[in-house]
Image 1: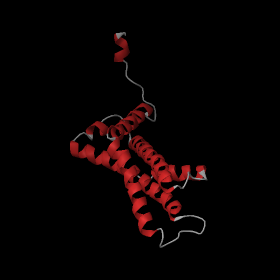
Image 2: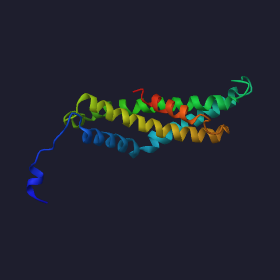
Image 3: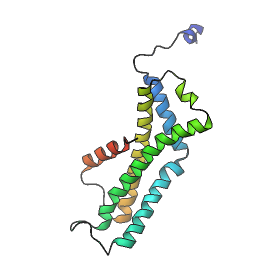
Image 4: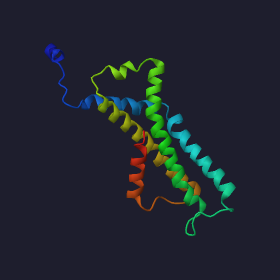
Length: 165
């Protein structure tokens, strides 16, 4: 490569797309490195909630006449896992960066507050969507509930719910 290639400054437009994408990739890599804690643990927790509530309450109460208690409970448990993990991803990333002293690596690059917000938001959405899809898949097998009938509405709830950071 020519030496002048390295001396030219990088042009950044109004929005630093490369910086946002890099921070997003860092966030995804961060939670995928410990996927047993960030993806598997919430799914196991939802499955345990499903088993405990079903064993304790299924014969004593009915959610609706058309649905079993498991069919009523599974979507709520999946959304609970989505909300918790989408929020936990963004908040833990910022707090861990502050505690470990590497928050400077996030604040020093030429990223504005909007770009930081978008990168963290999409990192949280990604983790929330992963947890939600895995949770609803596992819970549908445990509760014999099947997959959601209204996939467009379920996808909208999944994406909008994981935006709650």
